Amino acid sequence: MQDTLTDAQICQPENMVYCRTALMTQAPLSYCPGCGHGTAHRLIMEVIEEMKMQANTIGVAPVGCSVLAYDFLDIDMQQAAHGRAPAVATGIKRLYPDKFVFTYQGDGDLAAIGTGETIHACNRGENITIFFVNNGIYGMTGGQMAPTTLPGMKTATSPFGRDTETMGHPLKITELIANLPGTYFVSRQSVHTPANVRKAKKAIEKAIQYQKLNKGLNFVEIVSNCNSGWKMTPLESNKWMEENMFPFYPLGDIKVPK
Amino acid sequence: MATVKGRIVIDTERCKGCQLCAPACKEGTIAMSKNLNSKGYQFATSINDDCTGCINCALVCPDGAITVYRVKLN
Image (cartoon, rainbow over all chains, first blue to last red):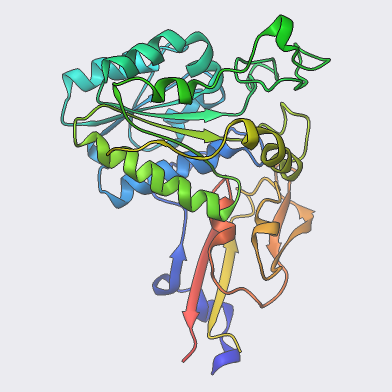
């Protein structure tokens, strides 16, 4: 019977090995084609579904491309003012210490306007989890230079490339907060290939599990592409990311619990 | 002979034609259709019978448009 199986025989519910998690709503994602945000959303929801934590999870959405995350994630969500997600999550976690509380932020939100909130939440060792999607640009507003923009990278506001003499240096905020005693687990991952997606999911699992230990803030950075902001196709932007972003933002665990 | 047989079902209305799934497939099963969906994207489609159900394409799909089935052959 081997080669005579029809599509209908194979496509039975008992043979299904992967499908979109039910914790993602049916709303079509507002992200550009090939954007890593969709994969990052899905991974977080898959882990929450596997841990059966849907009813005990509160997420905080940022301002940026992922401002509409509350439309896509089928859990309790709160939307914070620009950059203030760690402060809002702090309040939620202190009121509901039994809930799993996370923020989902981009680099314009977390590493620019929200640097103060981020660093102080990390330094206080708030028992929350931060998912940080870094694409080195302000994606939603049209591709302006962000603090995480690489030296020489062309953006709408640095059309000749970022000149570090006048525009400063890119901010490695993940390494910065890893030095703070309040953080417990800090990792940097990406979601552009199947292998990286699997590694990122493991890091997200750890960041969620460690929150139950009450040991401090858990932080996962996801280096992502912004193909429309970088003016490339999705495949070109992933290649550019491997060649340019990863040498500056190396992947891997930065701070692991002893 | 392959001991597993897979099939992918692509939600063509959800697909945005980003093409990330095509290089993720080691069997070369996925290509972009010449047809367009209602949003005007060239959606991904399965072009041959070599799928092993490895789920790599579904893992990288940002929009979660791919459902994967797998059966073991004796």
